[in-house]
Amino acid sequence: MGAGSGGNLLGDAAHLAAPNGEGANLAMYDGAELGKALAAHPGDVEATLTEYAQALFPRGTAAATDGTQLHEFLFGDNAPHRLVTATRRPHEPPGVGEHRRAPARRLFARAALAG
Image (tube, rainbow, N blue to C red; front, side, top):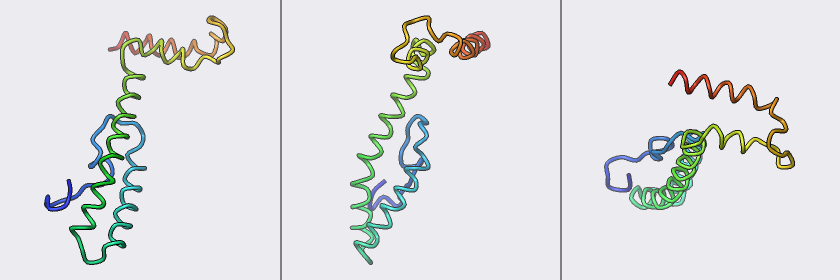
């Protein structure tokens, strides 16, 4: 929401996105940015909220994009295999290090059976 809308939002409320662990960070950053805008425009609520909103939306878009990518990585097609591949050490050929990944594979298998 921007100036003249009757309300303004911070943090998770302003950044509707798949959870990616950034909600509290954005809330604190948004609060700091709003404080800076208030200090820059004392007594001018319209200018304060306009400045705040202009910075808020690009930041929110970036957070939403990151959240969507993380959600796809963790829960999209082929997610368990993609996650196992991502945790493989770069110098390991396939099949090496399986003892480290076996618990994760069992966890994914149980989740697939339960779901």
